[in-house]
Amino acid sequence: MTHTHDHEHDHNHEPDYITLVDENGNESLFQILITIDGQEEFGKNYVVLQPTEFEEDEQGLIDVLAYSFTENEDGTEGDLQPIPEDAEDEWDMIEEVFNSFMDEQED
Image (cartoon, rainbow, N blue to C red; front, side, top):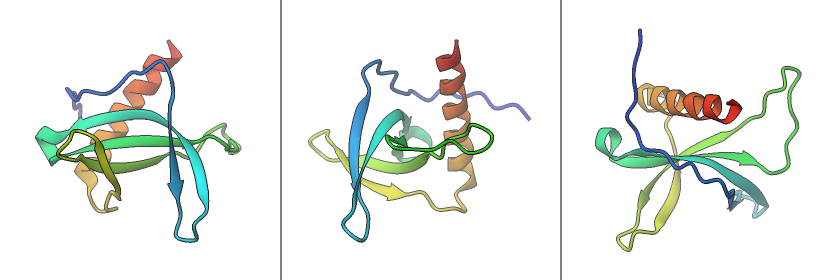
């Protein structure tokens, strides 16, 4: 089954970073790889993050994180929210857009 996407995503050439704080108060720095506009389909936007300190697995892959967010009324990005594991449509869209983004990066 083929699915085309028409989601806007940010192609910054200058990397943006965000600091996440876990439940124990530990801070970790992440690079924002891509932001995805999912307002039309899901009423929220998404961000895919890569830790700045990472190790590749045996296949050369790196774990990335994805979160949803809604913009605040002043246009700034609001709080990051976890994407429910059972939100298959959202995960499929994020994966498709992210894979397209990574393909473009390899060119």
